[in-house]
Amino acid sequence: MPLTINGTEHSFSGDPRTTLLDFLRRDCGLTGTKKGCDHGQCGACTVLINGQRINSCLTLAVMHDGDSVTTIEGLGTPDDMHPLQSAFVRHDGYQCGYCTPGQICSAAGMLQEAAMGWPSFVTDDLSAEVSLTADEIRERMSGNLCRCGAYSNIVDAITEVKEAGR
Ligand code: FES
Ligand code: FES
Image 1 (cartoon, helix red, strand yellow):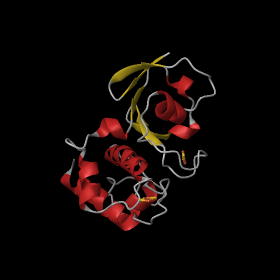
Image 2: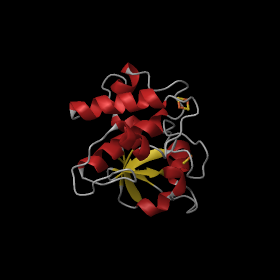
Image 3: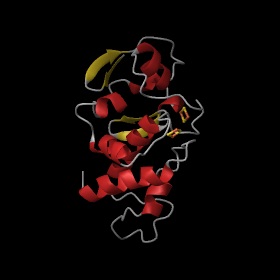
């Protein structure tokens, strides 16, 4: 079963119970995606599938025939960072860094959702253009927990990228 990961074609033929998270980490060696809870509660395993964010611990690899998966390794490299990656560095958006790949992949998906006009639980005016206030960012990123509590700097980093329109 073929799927594309970070622009490279991969093939999955293992145990159909294998989660996408385990396939990425164990079989593809893409250990940037982290396993926190393995139960859909922390967001550390967030990746993008066809541009949309998903908890990779809650989906099976076998369900992604033909899909395009982007992990933190595919968003940018140390020499050519994604704008969110460099903003997280500039704003100190992490401490231990364990949640960071998931935070950044989630933020990338979230910015797209807002650009497409998707409302959130705290959106007051459903007919107006989405304004990514700090409250909106916090709500939309609430599926990504940070045990180090770097939340305010994470919001600052995302706000900078949003304001730069990148
Ligand atoms: S490891 Fe997937 S949500 Fe926590
Ligand atoms: S930086 Fe440590 S868990 Fe978020």
